[in-house]
Length: 620
Image (cartoon, rainbow, N blue to C red; front, side, top):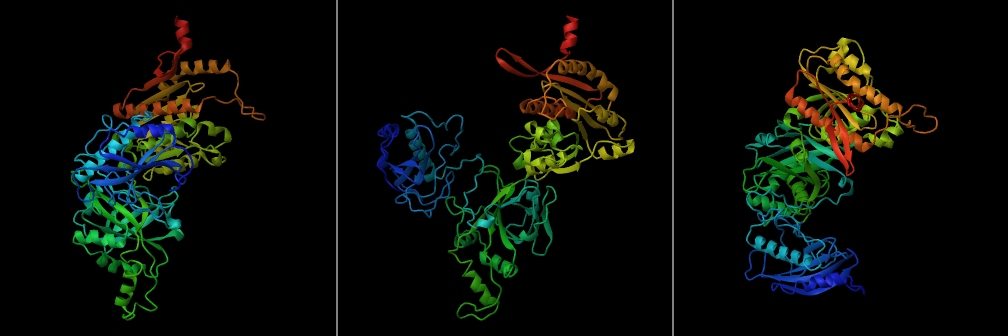
């Protein structure tokens, strides 16, 4: 920490005066400006009447305060001298750190609930209040300490929290991510396999650079335990990986709640569970000695969804294993050049107790995890969807469906991306001249590792047999082309299994959305044309009286104007309409028009409209 002649902000000084009424808090030093973090540091001690394991009667803290106080972050860190040395729940990994500074790395999580709290009623950081904000953080730290001393930071019923893990310092692996797709369903495959180990196979998650999916788990005999449930994984090529797994029966933590940081700590945790880490390594070493590919060990354990509940899923951490030289050369002193000698060379060398574990970034990418914050009902997610036309409306609709959990999509369009498309399409300028289906397909695969996309970069055309065969695998056929020819061709087919047909199109300026849907064996073109005709006449008249929109010199064709926000609003409405069509499966055509509504107060929303304005005007 480097002091400077800078004077502390008056508002921080005022916030410190608000701590005088807290008997258990003593401000020892500061505020002093830290050049490295560009924040003000206050050192204080918090006192308790009774000590406990890992928590003494007095603990020292460094509080980092933003210069914009009472705004900006406030962070509580254990002091390097006299501070907590253990890691608890609701705390970052608490190590001494490599930098020379006055605090450890175990920042407290004070602005989130702990110990059974509910955010809306308790956890409200008084941002902007000069007198109350610093005092609030100190009182929160004191409450955190009380819960930590009584082992009450994790309350029954709260979401289960994993301990914070350090991440690899190996540069070539910093941009890689190891992903699995464990669920409550796949949990059954691991029943009875705790305390065992085997091989793990990896593949590239296509179109998501650096993501390695666990394609298959095998036991020691080579029998498959479970496989990746998402789309087919690609070849890793030169980046091939030698993979292994080890499943332990309980969370891998040092008391109170710290992930192991060295091979020695991992051995201690395993031993407490009655397991021998070296027995697993003896089996593993022959496969990695002299191996050119990198080697990754997945260490897993069952976890519950909530504290106190039964385990329902396997969590995996990923470790990058040290490279081992071939069994050659000179073994350690006193050992012959045999299996025992090479074992001791490696066990007490690159896998010694004081060697740090190299954690890779690892995540669970199961659909339940990726779509938990917002997904469509199962009845919609499980449908196979064919989308005709991936222009502005179609591309956004496809993205919304996949983000909400749809995993089987066919894209049909023969157009390519032009610069003018980018203002309201999912494409960007780097996609110019690419096929739209290629661009949208890649976008969808980057959103979900489960989505399977069929790209048809040619016009929707052909004889009746071809059209029927092309669309036969799909439960839903969506038309976003605004093309009379496509609707006519669609109407020529007849399918033995009924499906949902829907046609979505925009009105002039994106101010209206036309939605037509039906469930049946064929697309009813006659009813579609009859219901849409009066609206098309109105749209044509509106367009004719409006000024043409041109891209620029040399672009003679008038453009259809619609802002991106209008298209997004329409696409979101299409998703809602599709939900209704799937739920109701209407045998009679369902036709709805949504129009943007406004008043002197501004935009009012997208509301149903029954009669075209021109018809309404004539009737009046």
